[in-house]
Image (cartoon, rainbow over all chains, first blue to last red; front, top):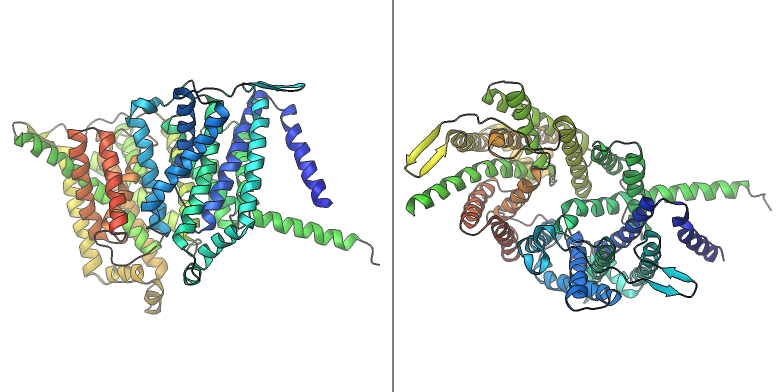
Length: 325
Length: 289
């Protein structure tokens, strides 16, 4: 009952959210929602113990693929988005053959190299990737009517609702995967690598599965972003963006499902609302870097740990104020 | 054609020299600290900006500016050791994120202090060494090659021939065993960070007049350095030097005969190939994943 109320209240807040915001804030909200799915999909990958630096490039694969399908094969945009996600998953499957020969730090650097190669290919080949300037005038999402509601997807508020629906369904799917036997196996592969192997678990196959699923959702994020922005270029999927995803996950904490999401929201609000609001345009990366350092130094378990402790204290206080029977 | 090849070879030798300075510093830091220093490219950038501040704007002699740059960047390394890597010693992922935070601070500091535009630095010397009609080497480039040879030899002697060098290598091999022998891990860590950072600073300072100095210049350098330390085997100083030469020659020749983007792709493919076939690198001895 309480839980149902919580979800209803959350849904109401999320639906009402764009109403009070300016156009640019609504736009920020669109990207924040996409980034939440991006970082949640990244967590699925980290469940198996591997930290990839190719996730944002894979997201770019989804963006490029979806845009190209819509432009060259006249695929309807919603379908091309799904095809883009599938393409990202396929590319991840191909990459997994060389990459999962490595583990740990080698995987980190190997995935970085693989991602950079893809980015350089976009830059090098003007046909069909558009070279350094990338793709422009990407097919927008066609507007549609739903009874009395009219959705014109040029408006950030409308696009936000589309993104919200897609992200909500995706997050639910990711959550179900994590709580299913598949997700438990991912945990086993991470924490009990040798034991899982001895118990007949094909560790590499499970790592590959996590990588492919996570990449599919990352590709979906890319496609969602590309059809809204109308552009996709190599710089948009560079190391800087990957660093942001990595820091969201680590500052939020990867022990729980909501940790990275918490990190994404907190750091985005900090970076785009607080620091921008203070007008520190050039000092922004400096303040952000400082927060990052302070977070790893003093919050090693992430923001999720802070939240859990606050909740526990709140509950403890609540229990004490209740009259004794 | 022979002259053209010789000229390209000289260019590659120059690239190998400054890249090996950077990569050796990165390997030294990784060996002792067990942390991948993502800010290493920005330490290189900080060295270049020291030359901007002291030589281009402050009119100090070039070599004095380079020396000041080495010391300043070495001190930055000490700061990183004390403030970031020591508290995060048991948390390698945390150390990596902290170094990313430090990288952002350094980039923003450079942008705020000097602006984001490319810096204009007068050449340190106009003289050109003419080896043959079409084989020339500008004197500042020769300095880089000489500096790399001298500094790396000195480092090699320090590590192999002095007691402290032994202690440093011992703590890189096995931190606990070294501590049990009475080696101060904090002290070896400080020295490794200072030397590693100072080498990147010298590389940045010496090459500053020949490259485009801007707050983001560390980015391409760190990618090359990663390729080199992977190919050479993480933790191996000799491997890093050999890999720096191999990478610089392959990259320079491919860039000259094809184009720069293809050269970058070839370099990354080289690294992937090494990772797949021999994940410990050319000179790596054991898996340190």
